[in-house]
Length: 327
Image (tube, rainbow, N blue to C red; front, top):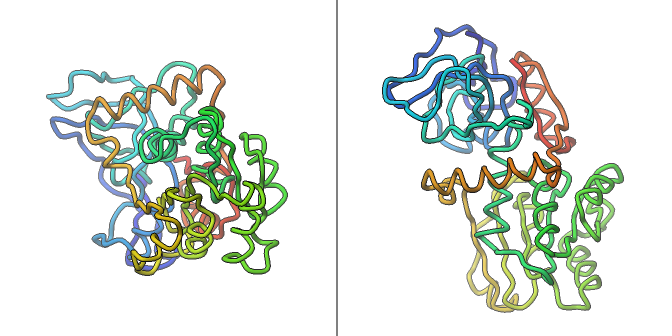
């Protein structure tokens, strides 16, 4: 099979297309012919060495495709089923093995590319609004990078739960997408002279001086100070990514000074810790897609061989929606 390996820690140039033996499923795994693989910031962190990984390694952990073989202990999935997943190492490939406990059956009416685009970012958006900060009617929430893959889904889900979403985006095209997803107010952060000063000022102007009940921040270093200063008293800062780099250590007294606010750094694994929780979240997302209540935007697709270009596009923060590789 063809696959994309990161040969060493570094930039996108370390990604190479290579031929590897076809994998075989273990007893608790299914073998899938990949229809599309998701490209995510965590892939870039692993490629760059920001997250410790062995090198070389086949990149990627998300995708969708058709089951072509099953292990001896597999009972719920059959050859020919379509499945999606968010946590199968080596997904930038033509074939990948997925543990049955992590595989999600893709229902009829959900295309392969949507199935590949939804697991990581969709499950993330779902746990953020249902578990990390249970969004309710009357809440004001700030969503950074609202035209990105998680941002568009998060904006839709928060709006459907009755919140008013204030979105940050980079420009006019991204503003249009954020508003289509349900954002009531949109702030173009590139037009601000001083992000840390001007963004909180705009947020407070939009909330009668009170600030927002929650900030969903996937950007990290560049937005953290502004996020903290935008919070309502006893508000919650949900830091779930670091596309601009990691946030430096934080003195807990800053949370006191900001109004007895809360800071949390959640991860997906802790919110799909059981099979029941994983399938519950996935079922709600797939049902919403089939009902036309959730739009999953595929922003860009690249051939598998062009994985380096996909990483460059993602890291430039020029993409909208989901980026996919097509083997």
